Image (cartoon, rainbow, N blue to C red):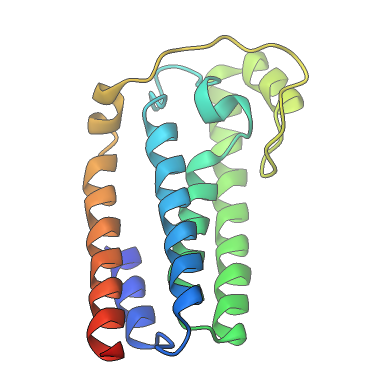
Length: 170
């Protein structure tokens, strides 16, 4: 809900005179949302240590996806100080959150999770140093992780951005 309120505020501040900014912003939002959907299709919170799909490339694909979604909405303002403030604020929030989650996951999964952390980067994607087991995409996991509601909200926000750009440019 907070993310949708942020998107609404940034939509209000959007720079109407730069159509290419809208394309860049929409690309970031859609890329981030697709990454979150892909990650949620593999996520089985607190049940299984997830190392498949995007989790084989980086440890925190959901946070990276959320960052891209928010960055896209910040880009429509085309105000460097808002974009920089968003990036810095999200970076601090995500780093603190992830450090806590990693402690919890180390306690939950022990040495296999520690080995996973040694194999896969926290933030920057790259192929794993060692082969990881693969698991199939699960629409049930997407549903269980409530990602479809988030996706619907993101698409609605993008539609509102498009409407605002279209109506105000004519």
